[in-house]
Amino acid sequence: METRINNAEDAEAAVERWRGRAAAVQAGLIREAVARLELDQMYYEQKGNGQGTKRCVTAIAVLRARLAELDG
Image (cartoon, rainbow, N blue to C red):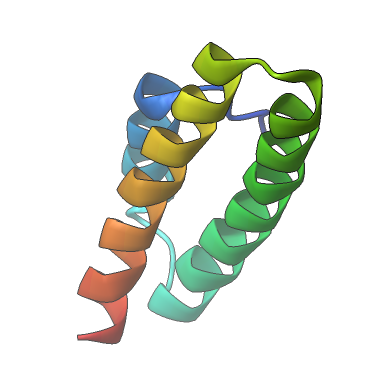
C-alpha cells in the first residue's frame, strides 16, 4: 500500500488517488487497506481506545463504500 490510512480523511484521499487505476487494482488496494485498518481497530479495542476504534471504523466505512461502487 502506498500510504498509511489513519482516519476517514486519509481514506477519502486514498480513494481519490486510486481512482485513475483499473477497478481490479483499486479493489485490491482497498481490501489491503481495510485489512490493515481492521487490525488497527482490534489493537485499539484491546487498549480501550474508543477514539482510535472510531477512527478505524469510519475509515473502513469510506473504503467499503468505494468498494461497493466498484463491485456494483
